[in-house]
Image 1: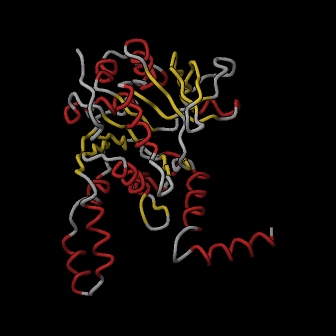
Image 2: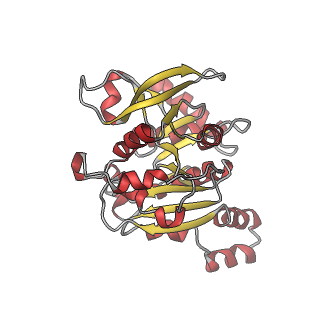
Length: 301
């Protein structure tokens, strides 16, 4: 089946993970709702999608993640109290969150891997191209620069080929990521583009010489759903997205490219702390005081 090329207007955010690295906090609070300063991780990801022109966002959540749906719903009591108290700025911030995009929630009944989670979104995505943004990866683009999702969408719209983001990591860290192999070329903006030949999920030592890692941003055409459906369980008995990506690369071609945004792995404790510190240093109310505190603290270490 041929899927027509079109603008990328839909996105999928898988948010069904158990968040075991943040236990016991994530026993009752979804990992995606942990705060970076005063906004949950998920809000940064939704904002990236919206800046890229995404209109419909499909949240693929698991059991016990009602807080995610509630966050994007109307809170009548809170909004009424803020209005009565004259706290218009806070009220407007809540409304902006609610109206940022069309938020659609789908349940992943069983934790069968990232590929399976994305496949759950097919009834909403249909035959349209779509972005995928992992729910614990924060990408911060400068105000005058496109987001990572925006860069990938532009590549798809120009080339007609599914495109994924990659970053170069030390050889000692390749076992933490899906790794892309292929022929590299220089891009006009100084970045690197790869015509993907293979994708390996968390390779063991010596399994791949490539250091191009997948940090959790993708744009696919709808053909990926057929490949996910025919993918057999791989590592840990899960349906791996990387296996379906290999099939896309062989059938229609797959591109990978570097990006310009800052990236924080907010699903990792250290990455989560780094995101809080760096973004707080840029906060108009907190930046100066935090910088002074860190400078004082540094003298005692």
